[in-house]
Image (cartoon, rainbow, N blue to C red; front, side, top):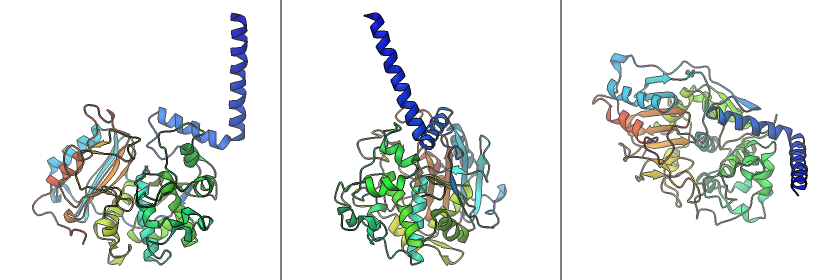
Length: 416
């Protein structure tokens, strides 16, 4: 009996190995990406930009760096800046940058990073595509946020999915297939959408109409990645080219890279926009200045106000943008079914008009128009984990900086 057990166990193991080998050989590109992703996570490098290929290059501007305030001219108390910098450094950060009143007040980089190295933005890329939609509206490629997505995803015409508007997609309330971030097995929809060579087929053909658009909040890579297809079909340009030439270059920002699913294929816009720190700062400044840069209207008038207006299904979420108010001690990216604890905010933000970009691993940029202030932190996922003593506090850094503003610091204007 024991001999028979080992015999059949051996046969089963060989069968499993054979099936796995066949699966690998028939999906080699996909499985190579999956294995590289797993290795990068195991080595603690998943918050870095370099593990994935192929990518499209995002065109750069040829512009001078933002001015840096000398220490004697800083508009923020040096002790406050040091406390915020020390907190960032203690939480496995790669960089901490503060802009206020027209100049960089602090730019500290750690663990081999510098101002030119690309940041793995994670879900801060969702905020980028929100601005890209605004830019496409300003340039007339899209009529308005209330235009049906099916005007561009024509495959949906005549189906229930034709009801969804761009606004509802930006509000993560599209009505289209709910997305399970917790399933990371290689055959899952989550992984196929993230690292598959033809994820546009999943987005367009495999998604389903599941709830009335506008009635539920569903933080979703499906929702955000669909917007890259909308941009490409609306502008007749590749996503990376449009972002670089029409959003980054007009504000003097450096370009970078964006993940694509195959050479010449489709870009991801729900994640994976890799830019240097200062490019993110410039995008934050653009929003703090109500969509205007050096007198040029980059985003439609009223776009920033529209962006930070709470959506019906989630008061903390606007048009692909997190909103600082109302105060919640724990803020969840996802609905009730996952991330049950949420990101800690030990106290309310010290400015009522603060809004923020936020991504996996606490990549975060806080924007305060009334204080003429933009603060960026990026790096590895801080330890300890959510809910444990000493966990990351999302209100700590911005509040230290806001309370450290000197009385004569240049003030900004709240978004009208």
